[in-house]
Length: 284
Image (cartoon, rainbow, N blue to C red; front, top):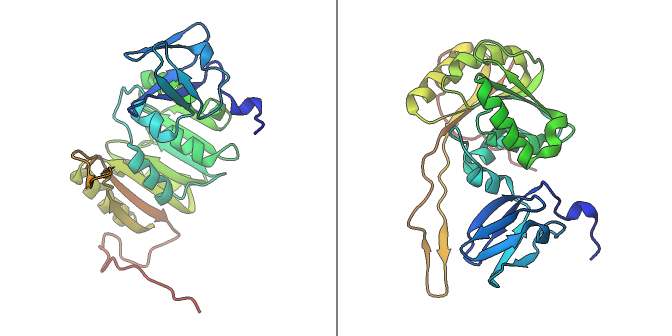
């Protein structure tokens, strides 16, 4: 099979090395450097120019596999200076916010950059992501992380020092996605920024935060499909003699509250929905 230069790893690219026991290592390739582990070392020059999925032997003869990391690999292995949105939650956020190629998305805060990287990958070059971050020192760190995973995305990513709870400059955006402590304070600015039919999504760790957010969305009188969910992921260990759940799992990490911005609501502001049954349409 013929491969182009784009299929091969490059100097400066971040790759994932996987050892024989499936342990994973994020490595930023740089000529003249060496990756070292208890299984031996590998010169970066032996990794540069390799195709995705190639096998490389260490100095002791152990075999590692080189892969281009997924957003999941990146988030779980990236340096963290703030809490991160876990991959299991990021996947649902993208669905709830309707993120697609070409979408325009406002997100806050930038933090460690994991959420921004996922959004940028989802909207692609035809879209745009605007990241708000209150703390100037976190902007540089967050951007460094994002550029490490999606270096080409600088063309469709903008970072601003600002507080979305005070104002959002953009208008007609497809989604506002918030990883901030008080998302209910950002509802009014989000209403100014969202296009009609756009999505509001917040990610918070506690039920009091959820309650204040949901009550504020209802009181605004301009949101429908208000819903709060959490995701639980449990791995399974599969062997020849048994199949069983792993002894540890990623349980609660955060609550995702989503809503759609509309012209006006039929329901009275502040009124809870009467039921949560899905409406099903039968096809002829």
